[in-house]
Image 1 (cartoon, rainbow, N blue to C red):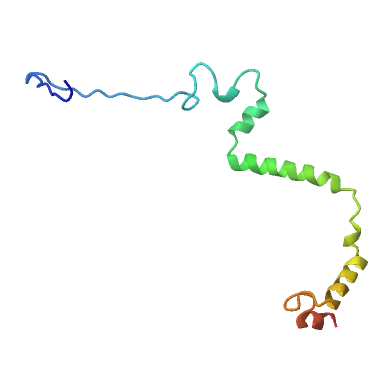
Image 2 (cartoon, rainbow, N blue to C red):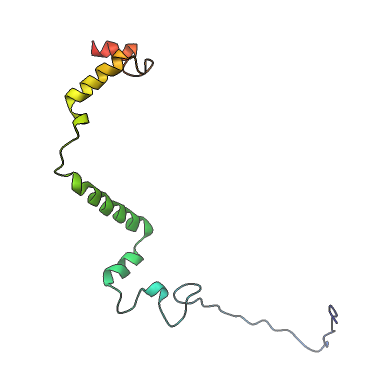
Length: 117
């Protein structure tokens, strides 16, 4: 029968017991006999173990810096494109002024014309 209560004998006493919970050493949902995510084994490189223990901000900043340096390496000895030469930029400004491009705040504005004069 569902929902019936039985009466406890009056001579029994309840005692409270402290229970100490110890979580698994490598975090929740990990086995007790192996390290989490393969780190900490004898096969794991020491630099990878040290990197995994760094604060997140330092690790992310380091990775971004390394990729920034790697992205800049091909540009070290490269010549600038012809569109960045002073002659090309002057011709582009003259073209924009002639066609009255961006007359309010840009090259064709009264303020920009007064500064160039």
